[in-house]
Length: 115
Length: 111
Image (tube, rainbow over all chains, first blue to last red; front, side, top):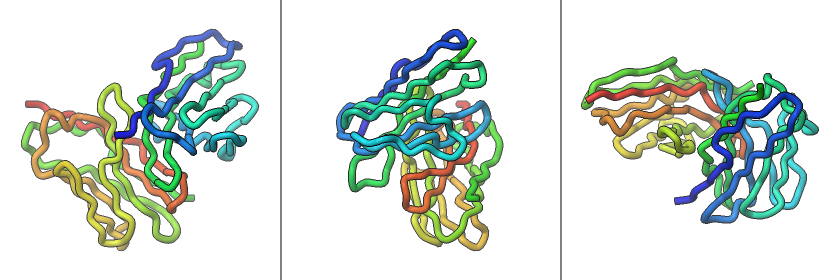
């Protein structure tokens, strides 16, 4: 089946630093990738949708200058949390789908802790 | 706006017990409904789905029926196994890319 990986799986950083999270589709070309955020005991919330080679579309309330998304190739999307603060600590999950299919394939998630 | 409500967990069962995880939704129109499962250390996987009222999705012994009249999509399995221990997410989508998830229900099955 389609496999999506994320790196790193866990990251701890100091407040004010930037953190980059990678999402890769390992065995298919992902024309569209999605980034979600999950707080403890809450549902996954879609942050943004990115299509290869174009700017990401952000959901209402998500700061695009804080959460930079790059989808430069058909197998890689990155999420950079800029100037991270403790309130950005969360579980970030990506998913990907290939053209013509509605099913999304999810990565295992990245736990970010900002001290 | 659209939303999904799931029963809080954890749900703790003995092996071979009957499982029900409740899911209700609020949405305009006729969304598609999904159940995803997340095993420890892995990404969410689509378990089953239903795209219209009265459809029944099924996979790996799990079933869920799209009930428009009660706006529900309860997940059931007749006999759970230890390997079914995971977190289960109910979700809806209006045939766009946007999935709206419930909070997830952790299932723990003991031998």
